[in-house]
Length: 191
Image (cartoon, rainbow, N blue to C red):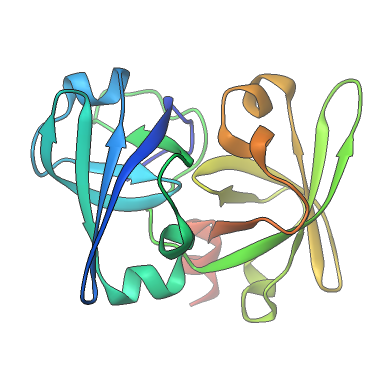
């Protein structure tokens, strides 16, 4: 379990494809230092298991179902990724409960920069519409965000300058594909 509070931006250094298996090598200064083999680490919001680490590189494997549902399949060497270690029992819960189980990809439709924040407008996947509500939480590429408004086929989030600067959101452009995880508590409530 995660909180959606990004701890570090890492850099993808290796992408190794072997049949349906992809191994990702991510460079990290902060998270790698404290990580242990078999730890869960969110990479752009996707919960992955650390299988190996060496000299600042963390290695993760992803298989077909994970690749088909997430943007991991389009990552390439040199791409920057949001990183977060799994929540420990005594950690502060600063964002919201994020499981790292991506519901869908979404596309960035508009970037509206304001002096006090940046509003990002995304496609709203229709099967997830009931889980994305105004003032509710979503995780976009692992970043915990509050939904500002929902209109028909799009939703908007506001991003404070600190979050924008300290995540990969600042590098995204209109048309960028990002991982979307709906609020687990809303999904649980709907059952």
